[in-house]
Image (cartoon, rainbow, N blue to C red; front, top):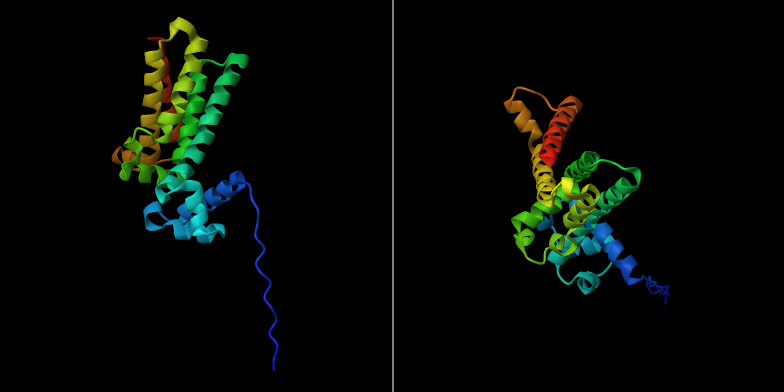
Length: 213
C-alpha cells in the first residue's frame, strides 16, 4: 500500500493589530491602484493580503470602512507634511505665502496620485464625504494648519482670510490638476511645465494680494 506524505499544517503568522491593519491597507491600496473600489470587494483585498475575509471584517467592520481607512491613511500623510511645514515655518521665519505654496504642492501631488483620486471619487459618489463622521471632520487638519498660520501672522491677517485662502487653493488646485488638459485645450494651449508654473505663479499672486487685504 502506497504511503502518502502527511502535509504539515500551515504555520500561523502572528502579527500585532497595527501590523495586521497595515498589511491589509497595503493590499487594499494595491487592489485600488488597478480597479475602482466599487468594482472589487473584501474577497479581493483578502486574497491580495493573504488573510481571511473574517480578519478584515474584524479590524475594519465593513468594506466601506476599509475603503475610507485607506483614503484616510493617504490623506493623513499630506496633513502631517503640512503641519510639519507650518511648524518649521515658525523657526525659519517662512512667510505665509511660502507656506501656502507648500500646501498647494502637497495637494497637487495628492490629486495626481491615482489611488487617492479613485478613493476620493468613491467617497464623493457614495455619499460618504457628506457624512458628519467622515474623517476630515474628525481630524480637522485644515483647522490645525489655519491655527498655526494665524498664530504666526497675528492680527495683520484675519482667520477668515486664511481659511478662505486654504479653501480657494484646494478648489483651484483640484480643478486644475484634474481638468487642466481640457481647460488649456479650450484656450488653444497645451499642458506642460510652463503652464503649471504660470498657474502656480498667478494663483500665488492672487492669494498674497488677498491675504494682505
